[in-house]
Length: 182
Figure 1 (spheres, rainbow, N blue to C red):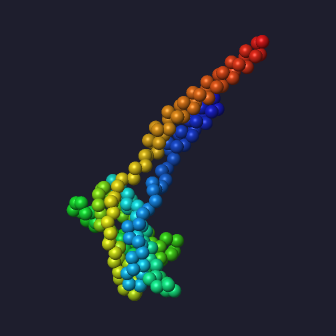
Figure 2: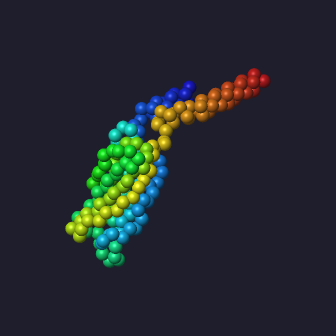
Figure 3: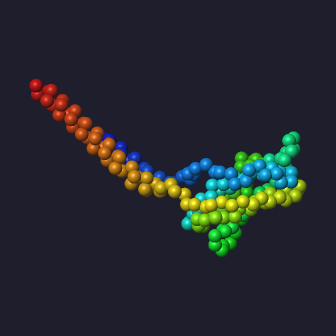
């Protein structure tokens, strides 16, 4: 009986827990070490599409000095813009923020509201000037199942485990009763 209560408690805990933001795969590069002015720029992305208006398209901009011994200036700022290529739509723009207060690593998240091809334009601005890089991505839906669907998928395995455990307990009790009577 205690095991059944434990299983029900765990199931209820999974149902009422808040979803966490996880990501389904590693980001991948769309621009690698492109030399532009004083900087060497790389752009990595995880272009997830969302229907609820959340910013699922994630972009990491790495800004390194072009020459060894130089450093990235403190005023460097990346601006990421995405525009649908397969239909008309308004571009979405976001100013990237430094990751862990490191200006050479910046992150921006944008709303990509449908699956398909998007043009990606990144402007890197500083007192030394402005450089731009362009690329394309294929946005897709995040294919992870919802927590409720995970529970539905796991339910048969939990039920089989519960039935198997119940069967083993009944056999042990029956075996103990027959030994006690003999």
